[in-house]
Length: 353
Image 1 (spheres, rainbow, N blue to C red):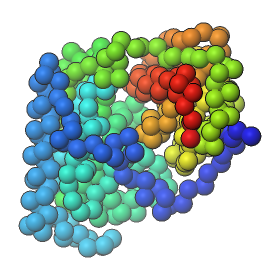
Image 2 (cartoon, rainbow, N blue to C red; image 1 turned 90 degrees about the horizontal axis):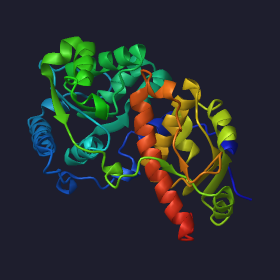
Image 3 (tube, helix red, strand yellow; image 1 turned 120 degrees about the horizontal axis):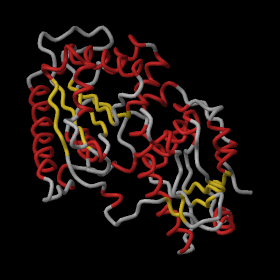
């Protein structure tokens, strides 16, 4: 019998949460040498050059011992705060590739996670314990820094400042909406305002370009007949099959910090009856799940509730016009990619395991 994500209620340990602070499988092989800048957008080459130099600076600090002064949880503070770097730009321009490449280019103790993963960690450990754990690293990478929740933004801003004061280098990315690229780098400005005292030592780099996931012109989420999706789910041991409404109801009962553990060993996640989402609560939880599926390169064959061959409106217009729109647009881009992979697998008769 095919399993379902809705049947899973994982209980990851604290050790598991900490162990997960590494680049996801999708970017396990990302290196600076494999980042190919788009010649039409010089800012991509400039960002690659700056990240390369930033990695070298961290390495020099380690050789001099300046970043190795922290011994255990009771480590002493450095006199000079560490500098940080912030990559701002639209979806799919290579910011995550560069951030994970930085992680791989730096030796020693370093951690990598999304903004949501760090806020979950602080919630699980408490601020001081989380700070002490992270301060043992010489580099903290934060992907997808979010500015839509004032409480979480201020929490992470404080964490970054205190890490910097302890000599920990911090690198972060955030998404600017494609239609907002000419608005004077609003995301970067908002970020710098939030971290206030750290603004003079946080370098902001703008990365322009097209979403590489949509360079083929694909915009909508490709859908398949429900019978084809259900039949394919029964052909592999690592496959799951869920109705969209049942999955949304289940996500409401599982904390988002556990979504990664929920898809352990899943090789293909099949969804049927996918329809428009109108609720922020449902949509925000779905965003986290899509991010985890994308990180692990899990194909997602989908069928639409209306039986069509494309899903044009996953999120309502009200949601896409809200303060959370950056998350929703990122999710649409990523799910479109996963659905395309899933459709190819079904049509080729590939084993989902």
